[in-house]
Image (cartoon, rainbow, N blue to C red; front, side, top):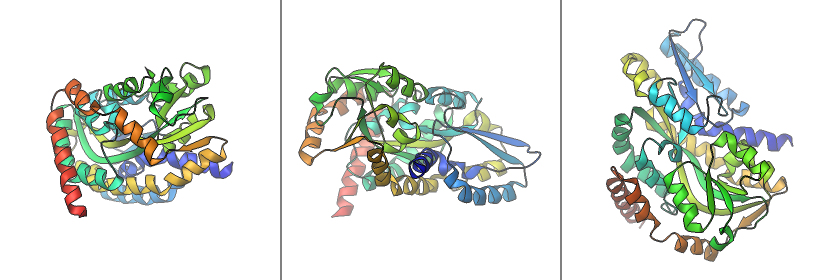
Amino acid sequence: MQKKNRLGVVAGAVLLAAGLGSQASHAAPKVIVKLATVAPTGTPWADSLDQIKKRIDAESKGRIQVKAYMGGQLGGELEITQGIRRGRIEGGGVTAGALASVIPELDILEIPYLFESYEEADYILDEHLYEPFKKIFDGKGFVLASWAENGWRNIGTKTRVVRKPSDLKGLKVRSQESKGHLAFWKRMGANPVPISMPETLPALQTGLVEGFDNTALLTLSAEWHTAIKHFSVTEHIYQPAAILYSKVFWDKTSDEDRKIIFGNGNKLAIESRTAVRAIGKELVGVLQSSGITIENLTDAEKAEFRKAVDGLADEVVKMTGGEARRIYEIILEGKKQFKAKKK
């Protein structure tokens, strides 16, 4: 139990582990930066965070103090997103799916089976999409500091075993509050119910929904695993996240403090991804040790899911509008370049 609890706590800390590198403490701070996330806090990061805090404290000479509000203390991801946009919250770590409520183009990143590997996703996000999205974020009231990572989403269910698309027909599932996610579930024949993260566990416990999709990391850290019996490794959506700040806050912050808060920018993504991936397989093992049956799909079974979402990409692009088509074309070009580099 001790090992399982520790891993669940680690999982919750990962999403903002890199972004919280902008923390500092001082008895009488002149600048307070509230960072919010739905991911729970985690003590295993204490040593590394302590070192980062000391560096930031030294650089700011005590002008900046970051306060982290973990585990949805300031609301679900939609509430956090709106809070950052309006300047009530200075910054935070939010998944791309949730940010899509304000920045619809982010839905394109979560088209099912869009990315074929971590390496491909990293290359496209960092080399092709970071700068375009920085401009889009700016126009929506945000400052994009760095990509982060939730990882590959899989399907957890209370009673039904899921190994093929037809297994989802008629199933009541929690969906992230995103047009792209809702479109995926409807294509599967499921009955999606948009529910925020803090409300998902009660919904599973009461039977309002019978399943969900998410990473092993978030499944454990949010304790959703306590309400399911099966976990199907579909890896149908790669979900990035973002460390971002409020433009309202940013515009009234000094250049010196901006530099300290921004830190190494998107280089933080490397730390975040490394931390998430280092414990990925171990977390699936923790799920299994909790009595959950792990359904490892064969290549043929995954191919059925890929076939079931054929054409969904164009649907998502059309319903998204804005700069969605341009972003999708950038991704396709990035995929071509990545494949050429691998040869």
